[in-house]
Amino acid sequence: MRQATATFWDQGYAGASLDDLSAATGMNRPSLYGAFGDKQTLFRIALDRYMDESRAAMIQAFRAGGTLREALERVYHAALGFYLSGDVGGRGCFLVSAGLGQAVVDPVVRETVANGLHELDRGFERLFARAHAAGELAPGADHAALARVAGVMINALSVRARAGETREQLEATIAATIDLICGPRVAE
Image (cartoon, rainbow, N blue to C red):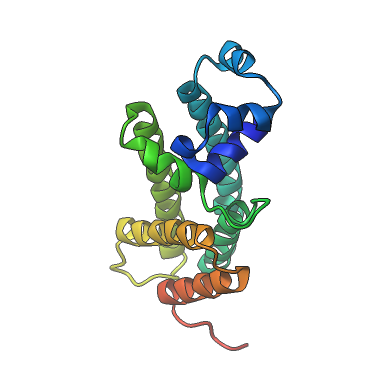
């Protein structure tokens, strides 16, 4: 399944032919059909698997504690670990890179993508609520709006990683995003 996921991640749903998937998995086409039914089902399984793995990593990053700045650094760097994991370079987030194109034509994938974005927003909202309770945010800060901005930046990192930006460029974007949300880092 890892090889099929990697093929979809690198080539997208439309770009990944059955021959590509057969070569990647070492299974001939009839065996692929026998094991998974069809390409669409295989893609959905790959997407669900990615969601499970990325969700576990993000939950751990969100729950680890510390200051808002530390938590944001953990969350963004956890995402970056996925985005730069390709054998041929940065491939971004599977949900964004491969899922969005298929979401237009597949309602099941669309729902998975929407749920993934919703979960990310909720994770950030909880993070900002904790930061607010700890006095790290202004009294009138809108947790939902901040969560959407923070989530949009995670998606932007995915796109930029897939477009070939270096780790250093992406880390500079992370630092600027965190400074925008938390205020400039104070020299110690």
